[in-house]
Image (cartoon, rainbow, N blue to C red; front, side, top):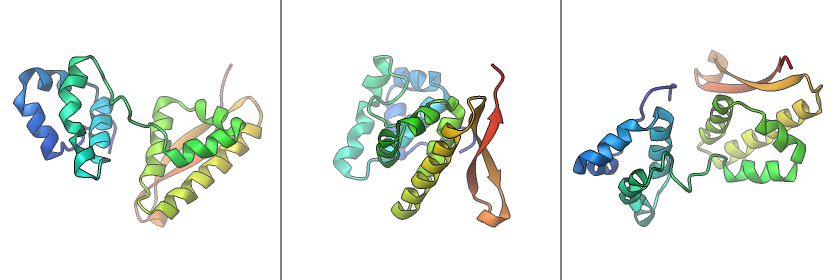
Length: 164
């Protein structure tokens, strides 16, 4: 999804928003990223009983929530890998919010669990290499679209000098 573009609303969420003008107004007041996070959180529920989380959206918005409360911003396998390597975790924390979102999005875009695990491993190795580099450099994520990757987004980690 491109920055600033609203996600396609699932039918059950659309019904909830149409049912209440107040909820719709609060929804419209969210940032595109906030709306995307709610949609992603709702769509990540696969079981019908979990999918009912859409019913909590009006109360969450009414209480001032701008993001789903329990929505993980880091995939669990990445979280576990970073926890085991403090320097790599520290390097990951230096990413800008946009870089972090793209980074996590690239990992989550892999539907195959083996591919996702490979991306986590590759990311941790690159972040670890950056952590051991000079303190004047910082990790930067760049999105590249190339024919070598079938036109799909490929997130590459590269170095960028930072002025202190």
